[in-house]
Figure 1 (cartoon, helix red, strand yellow):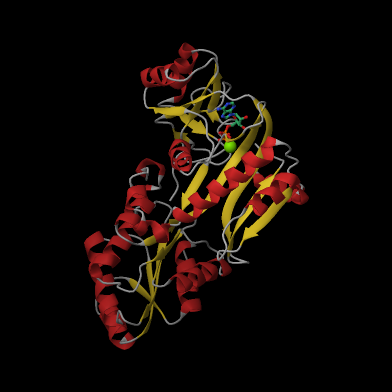
Figure 2 (cartoon, protein in one colour):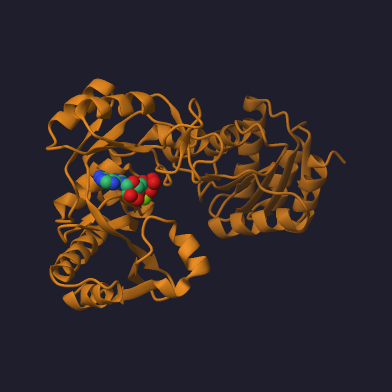
Length: 397
Ligand code: ADP
Ligand code: MG
Protein backbone atom coordinates (compact mmCIF):
# COMPACT_ATOMS: atom_id res chain seq x y z
CA UNK A 1 0.00 0.00 0.00
CA UNK A 2 1.30 3.42 -0.96
CA UNK A 3 0.62 6.68 0.85
CA UNK A 4 1.06 10.37 0.04
CA UNK A 5 4.25 12.35 0.71
CA UNK A 6 2.66 14.41 3.50
CA UNK A 7 1.43 11.26 5.26
CA UNK A 8 4.84 9.64 4.90
CA UNK A 9 6.57 12.70 6.34
CA UNK A 10 4.14 12.81 9.27
CA UNK A 11 4.91 9.17 10.09
CA UNK A 12 8.67 9.55 9.65
CA UNK A 13 8.69 12.68 11.84
CA UNK A 14 7.32 10.56 14.72
CA UNK A 15 10.42 8.39 14.47
CA UNK A 16 12.77 11.35 14.57
CA UNK A 17 13.48 11.60 10.83
CA UNK A 18 14.28 15.23 9.98
CA UNK A 19 11.56 16.76 7.77
CA UNK A 20 10.53 20.37 7.20
CA UNK A 21 7.36 21.92 8.61
CA UNK A 22 4.35 21.74 6.37
CA UNK A 23 0.59 21.34 6.19
CA UNK A 24 -1.78 19.57 3.83
CA UNK A 25 -4.41 21.71 2.07
CA UNK A 26 -7.51 20.67 0.13
CA UNK A 27 -8.46 24.16 -1.07
CA UNK A 28 -6.55 27.32 -2.08
CA UNK A 29 -7.84 28.98 1.10
CA UNK A 30 -6.45 26.16 3.22
CA UNK A 31 -3.15 26.52 1.36
CA UNK A 32 -3.12 30.22 2.18
CA UNK A 33 -3.74 29.46 5.85
CA UNK A 34 -1.11 26.72 5.78
CA UNK A 35 1.52 29.07 4.34
CA UNK A 36 0.51 31.64 6.96
CA UNK A 37 1.55 29.20 9.71
CA UNK A 38 5.04 28.78 8.21
CA UNK A 39 7.85 31.27 8.81
CA UNK A 40 8.46 32.11 5.12
CA UNK A 41 9.69 33.93 3.10
CA UNK A 42 9.89 30.91 0.74
CA UNK A 43 7.16 28.28 0.53
CA UNK A 44 6.93 25.19 -1.64
CA UNK A 45 3.55 23.92 -2.85
CA UNK A 46 3.59 20.24 -3.76
CA UNK A 47 0.90 18.25 -5.59
CA UNK A 48 0.00 15.12 -3.63
CA UNK A 49 -0.39 12.12 -5.93
CA UNK A 50 0.94 8.57 -5.69
CA UNK A 51 3.65 9.13 -8.29
CA UNK A 52 7.06 10.69 -8.48
CA UNK A 53 8.49 13.07 -11.04
CA UNK A 54 6.01 15.76 -9.99
CA UNK A 55 8.53 18.58 -10.22
CA UNK A 56 9.11 17.87 -13.92
CA UNK A 57 5.45 16.94 -14.56
CA UNK A 58 2.92 19.02 -16.48
CA UNK A 59 -0.79 19.70 -15.95
CA UNK A 60 -3.10 18.62 -18.77
CA UNK A 61 -4.95 21.94 -18.71
CA UNK A 62 -1.66 23.87 -18.81
CA UNK A 63 0.87 21.80 -20.76
CA UNK A 64 3.49 24.55 -21.15
CA UNK A 65 3.13 25.79 -17.61
CA UNK A 66 4.96 24.96 -14.43
CA UNK A 67 5.27 21.57 -12.78
CA UNK A 68 3.62 19.90 -9.81
CA UNK A 69 6.13 21.27 -7.27
CA UNK A 70 6.29 25.08 -7.17
CA UNK A 71 8.21 27.67 -5.22
CA UNK A 72 6.16 30.56 -3.81
CA UNK A 73 7.63 33.81 -2.52
CA UNK A 74 4.56 34.92 -0.56
CA UNK A 75 1.44 33.53 1.06
CA UNK A 76 -0.57 34.87 -1.89
CA UNK A 77 1.69 33.08 -4.37
CA UNK A 78 1.28 29.84 -2.39
CA UNK A 79 -2.49 30.23 -2.61
CA UNK A 80 -2.29 30.85 -6.36
CA UNK A 81 -0.05 27.81 -6.88
CA UNK A 82 -2.50 25.64 -4.93
CA UNK A 83 -5.41 27.03 -6.99
CA UNK A 84 -3.61 26.04 -10.19
CA UNK A 85 -2.95 22.49 -8.95
CA UNK A 86 -6.05 21.43 -7.02
CA UNK A 87 -8.64 19.88 -9.34
CA UNK A 88 -6.15 19.62 -12.20
CA UNK A 89 -4.59 16.50 -13.69
CA UNK A 90 -0.84 16.09 -13.41
CA UNK A 91 1.08 13.95 -15.89
CA UNK A 92 4.53 12.74 -14.83
CA UNK A 93 6.92 10.05 -16.03
CA UNK A 94 5.34 7.73 -13.48
CA UNK A 95 1.60 8.42 -13.96
CA UNK A 96 1.16 7.25 -17.55
CA UNK A 97 -0.30 9.59 -20.18
CA UNK A 98 -3.68 9.82 -18.43
CA UNK A 99 -2.10 11.49 -15.39
CA UNK A 100 -3.51 11.75 -11.88
CA UNK A 101 -6.02 14.17 -10.43
CA UNK A 102 -4.57 16.40 -7.71
CA UNK A 103 -7.08 16.69 -4.87
CA UNK A 104 -4.75 18.15 -2.25
CA UNK A 105 -1.38 19.85 -1.93
CA UNK A 106 1.30 19.94 0.70
CA UNK A 107 2.50 23.42 1.62
CA UNK A 108 6.01 23.13 3.00
CA UNK A 109 8.71 25.47 4.24
CA UNK A 110 11.22 26.37 1.54
CA UNK A 111 14.64 24.86 1.95
CA UNK A 112 18.07 26.33 1.22
CA UNK A 113 19.60 23.36 -0.61
CA UNK A 114 23.37 22.81 -0.73
CA UNK A 115 23.37 19.19 -2.02
CA UNK A 116 20.70 16.75 -3.21
CA UNK A 117 21.41 13.12 -2.26
CA UNK A 118 19.46 9.87 -2.44
CA UNK A 119 18.60 7.45 0.36
CA UNK A 120 16.32 4.44 0.48
CA UNK A 121 15.63 1.35 2.54
CA UNK A 122 14.16 -1.79 1.07
CA UNK A 123 14.08 -5.53 1.57
CA UNK A 124 16.80 -7.24 -0.46
CA UNK A 125 15.53 -10.75 -1.22
CA UNK A 126 19.00 -11.93 -2.24
CA UNK A 127 20.47 -11.46 1.22
CA UNK A 128 17.15 -11.56 3.14
CA UNK A 129 17.97 -8.31 4.85
CA UNK A 130 17.01 -4.68 4.84
CA UNK A 131 19.46 -2.85 2.62
CA UNK A 132 20.18 0.86 2.90
CA UNK A 133 21.05 2.49 -0.43
CA UNK A 134 22.53 5.94 -0.85
CA UNK A 135 23.83 7.98 -3.72
CA UNK A 136 25.31 11.38 -4.39
CA UNK A 137 23.00 11.54 -7.42
CA UNK A 138 19.86 12.82 -5.68
CA UNK A 139 16.79 14.32 -7.32
CA UNK A 140 16.91 12.04 -10.36
CA UNK A 141 15.40 8.58 -10.69
CA UNK A 142 17.60 5.94 -9.09
CA UNK A 143 16.90 3.56 -12.00
CA UNK A 144 18.76 6.02 -14.25
CA UNK A 145 21.72 6.08 -11.87
CA UNK A 146 21.69 2.27 -11.68
CA UNK A 147 21.69 2.05 -15.48
CA UNK A 148 24.38 4.62 -16.24
CA UNK A 149 26.49 5.04 -13.09
CA UNK A 150 25.99 1.93 -10.97
CA UNK A 151 29.20 2.67 -9.07
CA UNK A 152 27.48 5.75 -7.64
CA UNK A 153 25.07 3.61 -5.64
CA UNK A 154 26.32 2.75 -2.16
CA UNK A 155 24.76 -0.10 -0.22
CA UNK A 156 24.94 -1.55 3.25
CA UNK A 157 22.75 -4.35 4.54
CA UNK A 158 21.67 -4.72 8.14
CA UNK A 159 21.81 -7.95 10.12
CA UNK A 160 18.32 -8.25 11.63
CA UNK A 161 19.75 -9.84 14.79
CA UNK A 162 21.86 -6.81 15.70
CA UNK A 163 19.92 -4.07 13.90
CA UNK A 164 21.26 -0.78 12.62
CA UNK A 165 24.25 0.86 14.25
CA UNK A 166 26.29 4.02 13.86
CA UNK A 167 28.70 2.11 11.67
CA UNK A 168 26.14 1.71 8.88
CA UNK A 169 25.38 5.41 8.80
CA UNK A 170 29.04 6.43 8.98
CA UNK A 171 30.05 4.12 6.16
CA UNK A 172 27.43 5.70 3.88
CA UNK A 173 28.12 9.22 5.14
CA UNK A 174 31.81 8.99 4.22
CA UNK A 175 30.91 7.44 0.86
CA UNK A 176 28.65 10.42 0.20
CA UNK A 177 31.42 12.85 1.10
CA UNK A 178 29.64 14.30 4.13
CA UNK A 179 31.78 16.10 6.64
CA UNK A 180 31.72 17.67 10.10
CA UNK A 181 28.34 17.83 11.78
CA UNK A 182 26.63 16.49 8.62
CA UNK A 183 27.96 13.03 9.47
CA UNK A 184 26.26 12.99 12.89
CA UNK A 185 22.97 14.27 11.41
CA UNK A 186 23.09 11.64 8.69
CA UNK A 187 23.80 8.78 11.14
CA UNK A 188 20.82 9.84 13.28
CA UNK A 189 18.71 10.11 10.14
CA UNK A 190 19.58 6.58 9.02
CA UNK A 191 18.88 5.13 12.46
CA UNK A 192 15.46 6.81 12.62
CA UNK A 193 14.63 5.60 9.10
CA UNK A 194 15.55 2.02 9.99
CA UNK A 195 13.41 2.07 13.13
CA UNK A 196 10.45 3.44 11.14
CA UNK A 197 10.96 0.85 8.40
CA UNK A 198 10.95 -2.10 10.79
CA UNK A 199 8.19 -0.93 13.13
CA UNK A 200 5.84 0.08 10.31
CA UNK A 201 6.54 -3.08 8.25
CA UNK A 202 7.53 -1.10 5.19
CA UNK A 203 8.33 -2.54 1.79
CA UNK A 204 10.22 0.56 0.68
CA UNK A 205 11.07 3.97 2.06
CA UNK A 206 12.69 6.29 -0.45
CA UNK A 207 13.97 9.79 0.24
CA UNK A 208 14.79 11.48 -3.06
CA UNK A 209 16.16 14.01 -2.59
CA UNK A 210 17.70 13.84 0.83
CA UNK A 211 19.26 17.26 1.11
CA UNK A 212 22.13 18.83 2.94
CA UNK A 213 21.05 22.39 3.72
CA UNK A 214 23.35 25.40 3.53
CA UNK A 215 23.30 25.30 7.34
CA UNK A 216 24.64 21.71 7.24
CA UNK A 217 21.47 19.90 8.30
CA UNK A 218 20.37 16.65 6.67
CA UNK A 219 16.64 16.76 5.76
CA UNK A 220 14.14 14.59 3.82
CA UNK A 221 12.74 16.79 1.05
CA UNK A 222 10.65 14.09 -0.55
CA UNK A 223 9.37 10.85 0.98
CA UNK A 224 7.87 7.76 -0.56
CA UNK A 225 6.64 5.07 1.82
CA UNK A 226 5.10 1.79 0.76
CA UNK A 227 3.88 -0.80 3.27
CA UNK A 228 4.03 -4.57 3.04
CA UNK A 229 0.37 -5.47 2.42
CA UNK A 230 0.80 -8.81 4.16
CA UNK A 231 1.62 -7.02 7.41
CA UNK A 232 -1.13 -4.40 7.28
CA UNK A 233 -3.29 -6.46 9.62
CA UNK A 234 -0.82 -5.45 12.35
CA UNK A 235 -1.36 -1.75 11.64
CA UNK A 236 -5.06 -1.00 11.66
CA UNK A 237 -4.27 2.72 12.05
CA UNK A 238 -2.33 2.77 8.78
CA UNK A 239 -5.28 1.48 6.76
CA UNK A 240 -6.91 4.87 7.29
CA UNK A 241 -4.14 6.36 5.13
CA UNK A 242 -5.24 4.36 2.08
CA UNK A 243 -6.38 6.71 -0.69
CA UNK A 244 -8.98 4.78 -2.67
CA UNK A 245 -8.98 7.39 -5.44
CA UNK A 246 -5.36 6.52 -6.21
CA UNK A 247 -6.13 2.86 -6.88
CA UNK A 248 -7.27 1.16 -10.06
CA UNK A 249 -11.03 0.67 -9.37
CA UNK A 250 -10.74 -3.01 -10.29
CA UNK A 251 -7.85 -3.48 -7.85
CA UNK A 252 -9.80 -1.65 -5.14
CA UNK A 253 -12.80 -3.92 -5.73
CA UNK A 254 -10.46 -6.93 -5.41
CA UNK A 255 -8.91 -5.67 -2.15
CA UNK A 256 -12.39 -5.18 -0.68
CA UNK A 257 -13.30 -8.75 -1.70
CA UNK A 258 -10.03 -10.22 -0.47
CA UNK A 259 -8.88 -11.32 -3.95
CA UNK A 260 -5.27 -11.03 -5.11
CA UNK A 261 -5.70 -9.04 -8.31
CA UNK A 262 -3.27 -6.97 -10.36
CA UNK A 263 -4.55 -5.18 -13.47
CA UNK A 264 -2.39 -5.57 -16.59
CA UNK A 265 -2.83 -4.35 -20.14
CA UNK A 266 -3.36 -7.59 -22.11
CA UNK A 267 -6.57 -9.13 -23.49
CA UNK A 268 -7.02 -12.50 -21.77
CA UNK A 269 -8.65 -12.31 -18.35
CA UNK A 270 -7.25 -14.97 -16.01
CA UNK A 271 -8.95 -16.64 -13.06
CA UNK A 272 -6.60 -19.00 -11.29
CA UNK A 273 -6.14 -20.42 -7.81
CA UNK A 274 -2.67 -20.17 -6.35
CA UNK A 275 -0.10 -17.50 -7.12
CA UNK A 276 2.34 -19.96 -8.73
CA UNK A 277 -0.29 -21.36 -11.06
CA UNK A 278 -1.40 -17.80 -11.86
CA UNK A 279 2.16 -16.87 -12.85
CA UNK A 280 2.51 -20.00 -14.98
CA UNK A 281 -0.80 -19.22 -16.69
CA UNK A 282 0.38 -15.71 -17.54
CA UNK A 283 3.64 -17.07 -18.92
CA UNK A 284 1.99 -19.63 -21.15
CA UNK A 285 -0.47 -17.07 -22.55
CA UNK A 286 2.57 -15.03 -23.58
CA UNK A 287 4.22 -18.11 -25.03
CA UNK A 288 1.27 -18.69 -27.35
CA UNK A 289 1.26 -15.11 -28.58
CA UNK A 290 -1.22 -13.13 -26.50
CA UNK A 291 -0.98 -11.35 -23.17
CA UNK A 292 -2.80 -11.50 -19.84
CA UNK A 293 -5.23 -8.74 -18.81
CA UNK A 294 -4.61 -9.43 -15.16
CA UNK A 295 -3.06 -11.53 -12.48
CA UNK A 296 -5.75 -13.05 -10.28
CA UNK A 297 -5.41 -15.58 -7.50
CA UNK A 298 -8.89 -16.48 -6.20
CA UNK A 299 -7.35 -18.41 -3.32
CA UNK A 300 -8.25 -21.76 -1.83
CA UNK A 301 -11.98 -21.20 -1.43
CA UNK A 302 -13.11 -20.75 -5.02
CA UNK A 303 -16.82 -21.05 -4.32
CA UNK A 304 -19.62 -19.63 -6.42
CA UNK A 305 -19.65 -16.25 -4.64
CA UNK A 306 -15.91 -15.73 -5.10
CA UNK A 307 -15.98 -16.91 -8.70
CA UNK A 308 -18.79 -14.43 -9.39
CA UNK A 309 -16.83 -11.57 -7.78
CA UNK A 310 -13.75 -12.55 -9.75
CA UNK A 311 -15.62 -12.69 -13.06
CA UNK A 312 -17.24 -9.32 -12.33
CA UNK A 313 -13.84 -7.70 -11.78
CA UNK A 314 -12.30 -9.38 -14.83
CA UNK A 315 -15.14 -8.41 -17.16
CA UNK A 316 -15.26 -4.80 -15.94
CA UNK A 317 -12.01 -4.45 -17.91
CA UNK A 318 -13.07 -3.56 -21.46
CA UNK A 319 -9.78 -4.91 -22.87
CA UNK A 320 -10.76 -8.46 -21.93
CA UNK A 321 -11.58 -10.47 -25.09
CA UNK A 322 -11.60 -13.95 -23.54
CA UNK A 323 -11.38 -15.49 -20.08
CA UNK A 324 -9.15 -18.37 -19.12
CA UNK A 325 -10.06 -20.24 -15.95
CA UNK A 326 -7.28 -22.49 -14.72
CA UNK A 327 -8.13 -24.14 -11.42
CA UNK A 328 -6.54 -26.94 -9.52
CA UNK A 329 -9.15 -28.53 -7.29
CA UNK A 330 -7.58 -29.51 -4.01
CA UNK A 331 -9.48 -28.45 -0.93
CA UNK A 332 -12.00 -26.76 -3.24
CA UNK A 333 -13.22 -29.69 -5.32
CA UNK A 334 -13.64 -29.42 -9.10
CA UNK A 335 -17.40 -30.09 -9.02
CA UNK A 336 -17.89 -27.21 -6.58
CA UNK A 337 -15.80 -24.93 -8.75
CA UNK A 338 -17.65 -25.99 -11.90
CA UNK A 339 -20.97 -25.20 -10.22
CA UNK A 340 -19.55 -21.80 -9.27
CA UNK A 341 -18.43 -21.12 -12.84
CA UNK A 342 -21.82 -22.09 -14.28
CA UNK A 343 -23.74 -19.94 -11.78
CA UNK A 344 -21.44 -16.98 -12.22
CA UNK A 345 -21.59 -17.19 -16.04
CA UNK A 346 -25.38 -17.20 -15.91
CA UNK A 347 -25.63 -14.40 -13.31
CA UNK A 348 -23.25 -12.13 -15.17
CA UNK A 349 -24.39 -13.11 -18.69
CA UNK A 350 -20.77 -13.45 -19.81
CA UNK A 351 -20.35 -12.23 -23.37
CA UNK A 352 -16.72 -13.21 -24.04
CA UNK A 353 -15.42 -16.72 -24.80
CA UNK A 354 -14.71 -18.71 -21.65
CA UNK A 355 -12.02 -21.40 -21.65
CA UNK A 356 -11.90 -23.66 -18.59
CA UNK A 357 -9.22 -26.05 -17.52
CA UNK A 358 -9.94 -28.02 -14.36
CA UNK A 359 -7.69 -30.57 -12.72
CA UNK A 360 -7.66 -32.34 -9.38
CA UNK A 361 -10.23 -33.78 -7.00
CA UNK A 362 -13.58 -34.73 -8.66
CA UNK A 363 -12.38 -33.45 -12.04
CA UNK A 364 -14.64 -35.81 -14.04
CA UNK A 365 -17.73 -34.64 -12.17
CA UNK A 366 -16.65 -31.03 -12.68
CA UNK A 367 -16.23 -31.48 -16.43
CA UNK A 368 -19.65 -33.14 -16.60
CA UNK A 369 -21.29 -30.17 -14.86
CA UNK A 370 -19.68 -27.78 -17.36
CA UNK A 371 -20.63 -29.94 -20.35
CA UNK A 372 -24.25 -30.24 -19.24
CA UNK A 373 -24.66 -26.57 -18.36
CA UNK A 374 -25.75 -25.58 -21.85
CA UNK A 375 -23.26 -22.70 -21.73
CA UNK A 376 -20.75 -22.15 -24.52
CA UNK A 377 -17.79 -23.09 -22.34
CA UNK A 378 -14.65 -24.18 -24.16
CA UNK A 379 -13.24 -27.12 -22.20
CA UNK A 380 -9.48 -27.67 -22.15
CA UNK A 381 -7.50 -30.73 -21.12
CA UNK A 382 -4.27 -29.21 -19.89
CA UNK A 383 -2.51 -25.91 -19.42
CA UNK A 384 -1.04 -25.72 -22.95
CA UNK A 385 -4.36 -26.69 -24.53
CA UNK A 386 -6.18 -24.08 -22.43
CA UNK A 387 -3.76 -21.30 -23.35
CA UNK A 388 -3.87 -22.17 -27.07
CA UNK A 389 -7.69 -22.19 -27.04
CA UNK A 390 -7.84 -18.83 -25.22
CA UNK A 391 -5.36 -17.25 -27.62
CA UNK A 392 -7.28 -18.67 -30.59
CA UNK A 393 -10.50 -17.21 -29.14
CA UNK A 394 -9.08 -13.67 -28.93
CA UNK A 395 -7.49 -13.91 -32.36
CA UNK A 396 -11.01 -14.59 -33.66
CA UNK A 397 -10.21 -18.09 -34.87
P1 ADP B 1 9.17 14.72 -7.25
O1 ADP B 1 10.22 13.70 -6.93
O2 ADP B 1 7.81 14.12 -7.34
O3 ADP B 1 9.52 15.57 -8.43
P2 ADP B 1 10.17 16.22 -4.95
O4 ADP B 1 9.51 16.32 -3.63
O5 ADP B 1 11.38 15.38 -5.03
O6 ADP B 1 9.06 15.75 -6.01
O7 ADP B 1 10.48 17.69 -5.44
C1 ADP B 1 11.13 17.97 -6.65
C2 ADP B 1 12.24 18.97 -6.42
O8 ADP B 1 11.69 20.17 -5.87
C3 ADP B 1 13.30 18.51 -5.42
O9 ADP B 1 14.31 17.76 -6.04
C4 ADP B 1 13.79 19.80 -4.87
O10 ADP B 1 14.81 20.34 -5.71
C5 ADP B 1 12.58 20.73 -4.94
N1 ADP B 1 11.91 20.82 -3.63
C6 ADP B 1 11.00 19.98 -3.11
N2 ADP B 1 10.61 20.36 -1.88
C7 ADP B 1 11.28 21.49 -1.59
C8 ADP B 1 11.36 22.39 -0.48
N3 ADP B 1 10.59 22.20 0.63
N4 ADP B 1 12.18 23.44 -0.56
C9 ADP B 1 12.95 23.66 -1.66
N5 ADP B 1 12.94 22.87 -2.74
C10 ADP B 1 12.12 21.79 -2.71
MG1 MG C 1 11.45 13.27 -5.44
